Amino acid sequence: MNIAQATAAIHHKKISAVELTRQHLDRIEKLNPKLNAFVTVTAEQALRDARALETGPWRGPLHGVPIGLKDLYDTAGVRTTACSKQWANRTPAADAEAVRRLKAAGAVVLGKLNMDEFAYNFTGATSSFGTSRNPWNPAMSPGGSSGGSAVAVAAGMCMAALGSDTGGSIRLPAALCGITGFKPSFGLISTAGVAPLAWSLDHVGPMCRSAEDAALMLAALTGKAVPKVNARALRIGVPRKLFYDGIDAETEKLVGEAAAVLGKPREVVLPELPMSKEIPFFIESYVRLITAEAYAFHLDMLRSHPELYHPGTRKSIENGAGVTTPDYIEARRDMERLRAEIGNWFKDADLLVTPTAPGPAFAIDAAPLVYLRNCAPWNLLGLPSISIPCGLTKSGLPIGLQITGQSDAAVLSATAAYQKSVPTSFPAAL
Image 1 (cartoon, one colour):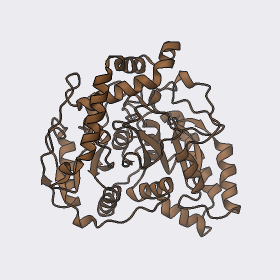
Image 2 (cartoon, helix red, strand yellow):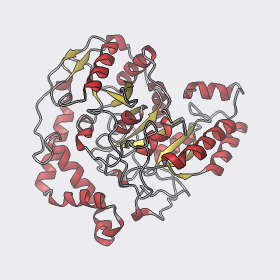
Image 3 (cartoon, helix red, strand yellow):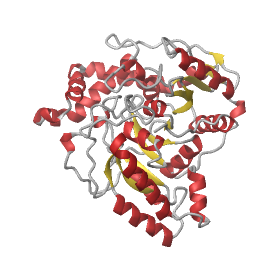
């Protein structure tokens, strides 16, 4: 069932919130030892909450829907560690605002999900709880940093999850695990009570099985229904430069076929941007912002207990020490200018279609940074962007299609129209 079907079934007494919760808890018990998606399971509290929903008033669009939370969302009375030894014993007193809103809409929280330490990686390998496993092939990475969220949704351990995205951390795991991952417009969903990576680039958003589910999650998180947009009227643009460079042949074929379903794709040329000398496929201002802001947040912990970080996380944090104040100010000004002039990117198209990543899931011990290349620009620009599955490779791994626009409603409407035309919600081959 999707979310709408589940809440309808609960409303019409075809299934109870307790039954639905138990089904997912059973699934967690069966599969989590293999996949390591959940780091904390709140089974007793989830069942209490589900029982309360059966006797209380109708709560909203997520009434009785079992969800999971990336372990950087504060949860009252439940440990929130960001999967780091730095916060191993941290138990918040209050819920993050996004969590409060989901509970108010009737969601049943099953527990906290695995992630890269403090969200500062993209492979899943830096968690203090060990690496999550891709449910399509446990030898492959689920992506990161919201890897546990993607695995849990793909494997049916929850109906939806919250992730966070600073350079692709919702969309990349969604692509590698074959689910729908939506990064809304910057600032649309509150980040209060969410451990930051880089304040200027952080987005929080839903990870689900479909765009329709994502729209229901977004409505609960913002308090406003997502308006419908005529998807057929939207112009589809394909920016080949950079985004299609060096991509896997199967990926290019599947993404091209999906773009044709969306409409009549036209090739577009986007404005040139100064790229980083250290990482040539990343925009210079993006690199300066993420490294400087992460360094600022972690400075006290880095000075007091550097040994508690995963070595990879510590190295990434320490990279921010070299960003000067003029460098940072220039990067902020560049970001603000780009966001103010974003109309220049959409003169010839309403939506931009690219592969989410240059290929399918990579080996669990690999770390090809180029896999974030197609995602990170949309964090700098603050634009809504979604990854959806658009097919499987011959080896049976999912490929992600990324759709980006100026309007959250347009991105979700176009994606929903595509998913109605092409069945793309398939269960992971466990």
